[in-house]
Image (cartoon, rainbow, N blue to C red; front, side, top):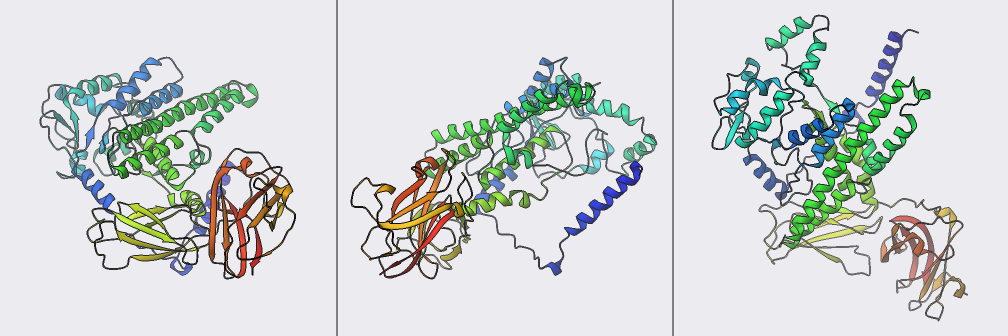
Length: 571
């Protein structure tokens, strides 16, 4: 079979696979209603709309500074060092009210020029920019693509701002930096190099004529057109610190070894991993800097709610700077970081987020398994001045509903019981009247089956006992096992593992007692490490007595995944 036939077979197989993913109305799928934007979002987007498109030279400065410092290095490593340094030195900006942070540049509605990709435009206007004169007449393609005045465009120079392409504003003091950097790349930019290769393509001048007459989308032959989709798997699965370690492992494995190629390919692959390590170090520092900025803002923030939001941002950013994301929020923030990093590396016309819902679904499900629910609601005039009191609880439980305060029309409830129906109620903190629905119900999903540290339900034994009289008792003090207790009797629990792996991971231990209908009537939880939970492969404790006669089930959860359960009765 020749190569061409093999390629056609692969493409045909992919085409069949893609068709199998098509969704039709007959399959029972429907369009979800798009919810109305929250007051938080509306406030932030209105600020964004009032801003002007701003370019600055911070990223180009650091890119070129480090590029020049590493003259003579392998090109891909040199480029990676330059871009990694640009990311690591980008000034982080966080606006009050933001929860998902990060921007392309230090400006919220900002961008920057890429002279190392395409320098001809800036060099053609260098003298005019330096003289703060009117820009040259627009090219025909630019005339056809000019966005109307407004919408953030800086259509003409004013004050200390110079208009670039009638779209962006650049401060006058940064113009000399732009001109100096652009002149360096005049004969060696990606645009120039690809032009030389493009001329070797058959019928190049025919396609060039199409482009020049604007019959097709104008192009520099250097800027990618179309859509690309990021593979988020590596950062989501491993985190940046582990990716750096993996790069070191691959460098040690293949750099310059003949058995991995002919000696040359081994070096080339090694250079790739060396470059990838530099980029990843820059990404990690970029995220860490946002965490440091959030901590700085939290220190001087007088509003308790905003202070808490800054502190939460700091935790998220420091976590994703080094580790695999552990929550849906961290995963979403990491994918956004990766998206910005890719579009910052190359002036692409489009970078698709792909099927991001599928990518993030495991993190969303894990948040649900961890006992987290986000509730939101709509009001005609936003949140009341004093915010809301949100009460939530299980109606069948002996415990009083919990109370949580919030300032927005949404709240995240944590530490919920698996497989339980919750009632959520709203009350304005200032006592104002509310018309409409102020109560809702939500059901938490089941937590799944525990399977970690060598422990599973099938390798765990559970028993209930009379509680020993002594104060500091352990499993050796237990003498009478039983499954029926009086309403005023203390109940002792003993779990035993057939095997156990050591770990100092922090866990959430949760006891849930359900009635004969499966409804929770009592619960208790504790935070401890996995090793602290066990003594000689056994865990002992007292559990809440439901107090009323009936049939019950005790469920023991670790990290809201079921480890073991046992039925008992109260007489």
